[in-house]
Length: 78
Image (cartoon, rainbow, N blue to C red):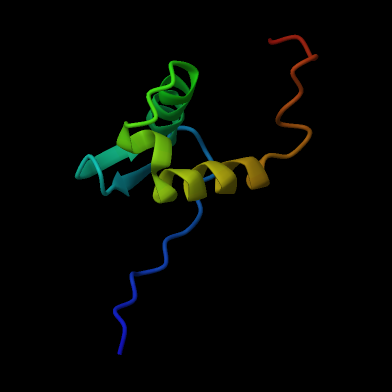
């Protein structure tokens, strides 16, 4: 029988934390996004954050959970 990892709920807020297997600690989604963007922008394709399947899943969960009312780059900030 194959080992199954526990199902974790999707992360939908930037301050939500999850266990990063590559860093071996809890990190926020914001930190995950920042590290991925930095690795992508500066072509650090050898960094674990660039290829991380868990980070990709969390970023996709976050993007899927965004509501148009929550994200409107053309609206002024309060």
